[in-house]
Length: 134
Image 1 (cartoon, helix red, strand yellow):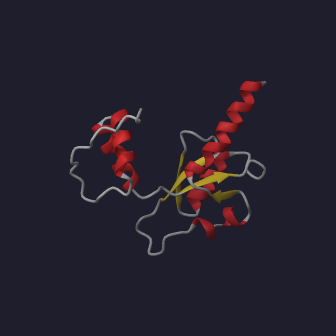
Image 2 (image 1 turned 90 degrees about the vertical axis):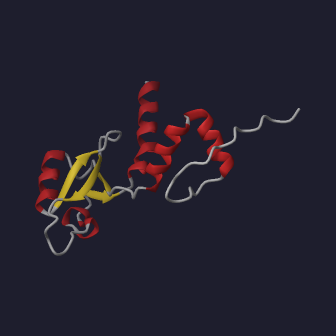
Image 3 (image 1 turned 180 degrees about the vertical axis):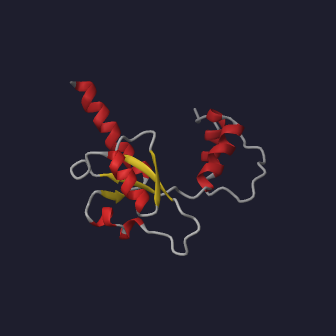
């Protein structure tokens, strides 16, 4: 008995060819649908947002952290899936030189560190699993 063949993908109109195997795209399309597949491919083409994680040992008040980052030229929004994670943007778009998180005093003192938002997910998953055991 041969394994079932994935459904055939109809031609999708996209500006750039997706960088994924056609068979994978066909399987994803079968489970998500064509509209959701388009949304997924569009979101994969967008650039990543800058993110940071606050050190629990060094920072106890996220509100003061937000004020100090704003003072250095950053805007901060909380990550929806990580209590210590934040998305960072530049608050002053009129300045000639964009501030860099790695050169900020908060980063050099160890209060925050740059970490991609998806890298915080395993820690949160392990934390939730540990809480469910007890």
